Length: 255
Ligand code: SF4
Image 1 (tube, rainbow, N blue to C red):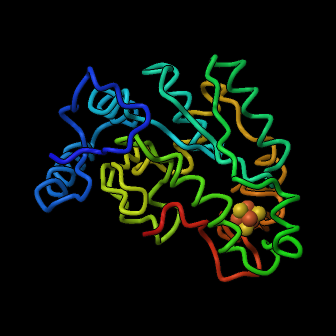
Image 2: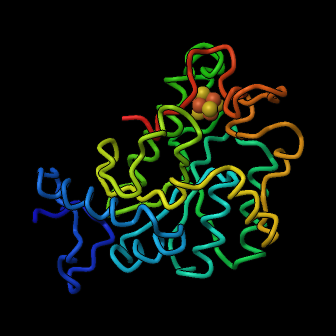
């Protein structure tokens, strides 16, 4: 298999790992991922994470926005492989309550979530664009402050954990447990694909997993502060994201 060649963290002495993904996935590779995914359909999230760690560590990572699903996976990883590197895209527009979760994760699990920052500060960015771009062009703002940063952060890794659930939205309904992330060129593993919101909150409650205080204040889904509002009873759980724009995803999980 052809392997990543621009990996700054590659340990040459270790050589190519058996699970190195190809630079351009061929049909055989995609078929093998689909088979792995199928075989994990009945596995628990913990079993899926164990499989991912066995298969891909030390080239396995996780990006989190500190949502309830992400916190659930962090909790599981703290028991399975606490050394797994985890990072957060700090756009500069996150809620204080979200940023505080990084400290709470550190206190509870001893895990330091790394902040990945855009090249410009919020002040510089808004100056460049004559004001906050999230008001006029949130797609561009998300691209610059999330997707671009994530592309850079994804380099060198072979697989990452995603916190998506299939029942979150029609876009996510067919997400595989193991699949090829075309956008970021690595294997994407979704251990909670088959879990429901109730499953997630049951575990949070049972294990006293830290979670964003904003969930108790009417925000079922929390993104950047300017682009997140309280959701009313009966609304979709992501209705409070980019309200007023034809936008429900930042682009991380869309192809
Ligand atoms: Fe910008 Fe809003 Fe996207 Fe955050 S969620 S990056 S503030 S458009």
